[in-house]
Amino acid sequence: MSGIEIAGFAWGVAVAVEGLIETLVEGIKHTTQFGSGIERARLALSLEATSFRSIKRVLFGTADSPTPGRLFSLSDLQTQIDLLNVLRLLNETLESKYCLVTSKYNASRPSLLTVFDNSIAFGSYHNVSLVRKLRWGFSEKAKTEGAVQELRIWNERLLRIIQSQMVDQQLSGQIHANSGRRTSHYLQILQQTEDAATLGLITDMRLLNLSLSDTPGVAMVDLEQRDKKRYNTAQLISTSENRRLVRIANSYILIEHKPFFSDQEGRPSQVSWERANQLANILHEDKPERYCSLSCLEFFVEDGQFAFCFNIPSQHEYRTLSQLLSQSKVPALESRFILARELSAALSQFHTVKWIHKSFRSNNILFFQDTQSKDTTPSFHRPYLFGWEYARPESGFSSRVDEKDDIEENVYRHPEQWGLPTSSFNRLHDIYSLGVVLLEIGLWKPVISLHRWGFKNVGLGSEVKDYLIESARHQRLRAAMGERYQNLVLSCLQGSFEFCDPTMGTVAVETFKKEVIDVLDSIIRGFFQ
Image (cartoon, rainbow, N blue to C red):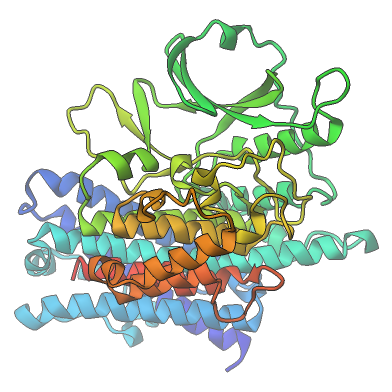
């Protein structure tokens, strides 16, 4: 099959999918059996439908046939095949759900052959009769939420493939920058596409550029606030070891600290300042929700530390995952899987743009709550990552200032990062820390409580790692979360991924997504069957 034939077939499948999605949206729009949850369900499904239409336009353009020179035709053959396979699987999934309706009401459904006939529009299937026949399939809220979750998962898979191609193109451009090679046609088309900005792909590209510090043409804004008066006089709401929440006028600001190497005058060294400003620029970007990160307003210097300032919703306070593990009752099983999935996806998203966290642990995962609301249940689908004090580009210099010998922090660190690191921090070290957090979520216990003495009598990181692996292998985790969850926790702790080189600390982003995120997606979908 030629490239033109693949593009034509993929476009046809995308049109079929779009028609089925529109039918589902229409079904909810005309259904009256949801009660109070109908508006939220309708809005969520409409948003996912809009995202798919944006993805389709990014790949194929807006014409009634695939437009030459769009991203699909500019992608390499393997990427085209990957996109086609995801579209076909999505089409089959939606048709299967659609057949559940037609098998009861004997209603006809548009076939793929019909899609290729330009004289027939999918709108002709959106009639009241068909909508009525759809109603029974959405009579239960869980089925509606399942459709939303299904679309979200498939949309994200399509975006991941586009992101992967974008990163490859960007890295290739960086390698050939010195030879005068200009930005690839793929990236030029992407930058000119309005839907790419809507989907967050332009932000992904900017973040990748910021991470690749030697990329030509990357301009960073000086985000240091040298007038600290408003922060010095701010109303203190709450404080912890390395962050504080303050109120300035009607705004709530969360301030987080990062130590630095100082010069003879007590100011940060030039290298430290540049790293802090680079981090502030990364965090300053208005990122899509998939990053689970608030925007950094600015930073300033106080008491030998950088202070990064984040704007949070008014009248909101926060709790850390560490606090919830110690204080709250065990959440519903579904909520724990969703939390595990969101955290895994967020960390992977930063890895995609070549940035590593270096301090991934429970007290750096925050949940914000409206103090005026009567509902005190944390939003487990909306965690936020903090603790950026040691974060850096994947290719950057690895260092930690003022290293603390604190077992409650060390227990999350890979053994190679205990004390004086024996290797440069890499992606697998972040994934190890994620594995510790996933173990906590599965057992709903702080990791420090898994050991009788809180690991205080354990002197080596390798001993802690062995103990955590044995804890993950225990029947308790399998009984609580199932065998598939247990296996992915072990993969994170052991670094045992397919096509993984532990000696180099490398694991492909796509491999991690396949063996962790896709597995969690599959488990979550089971709750909505």
